[in-house]
Image 1 (cartoon, rainbow, N blue to C red):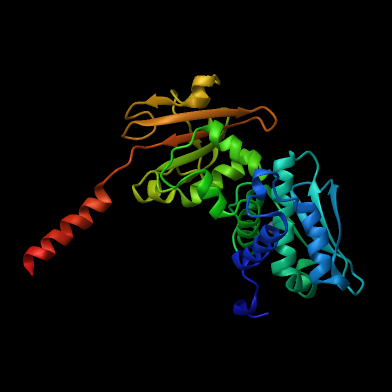
Image 2: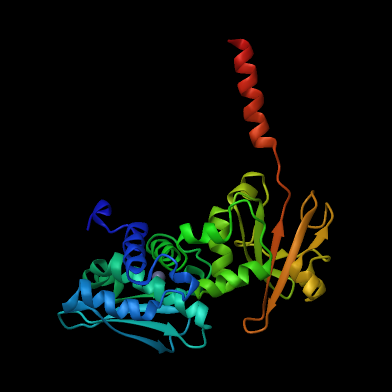
Length: 299
Ligand SMILES: [Zn+2]
């Protein structure tokens, strides 16, 4: 299938969002998150009655968090599998991701022999949303379906600096993990912020908001070991309510500028989630304004 003929993730998610809004009302998230398991079964039967998703099941798939597989026989019968031991929030995102593969990539998966009649997805692709190509498309679909931006932005404006209480409430609203909600917010926030996931004082991965990245605030965690500062909450293992709400850190602790650090620990995954909030900077905009003023004088 040509690249341009492939269904687009955001378009597919928008189609389903409109349908769910029509059935359950635009305020549906006030009542419940998307029931993604039921949606996968019912919607696939609607659009592909001969080759629908027959089951959404838990399986032991070592090294993977989820998979979309089909039968050898024709017409293809499909199944979504999710790995053992996922919290309900992670499971919802995994199922959403696999539904994305079904809607966007099933033709490719069933015809291209290199797939071997299935696509298997790892933690990096699903939970960290750090995959590329098809994985990235499935993630974009799942995020848009489970956490539509128009609703998310209403709950949490682009200029707000949320703490973990606010973000946890949103994770609950959308029935996803705290990490998934934080990553969704990082996609549109206009503030400078970084999220760091760590274990025993070392970063497993980190992600910056656009504004933070553009101002040079990011952490290198790929192919390198990043040790958290000694004064970081996660390093000190100071998992108090105060740490959850935010602690001021001086210049030189994380970066050459002060910031507010928040940290929460997940015993289930033996990981800490740290959020760094920076002050707003005016430099980018000021430069533009100065340029404009100079242009005006020159004219
Ligand atoms: Zn995948």
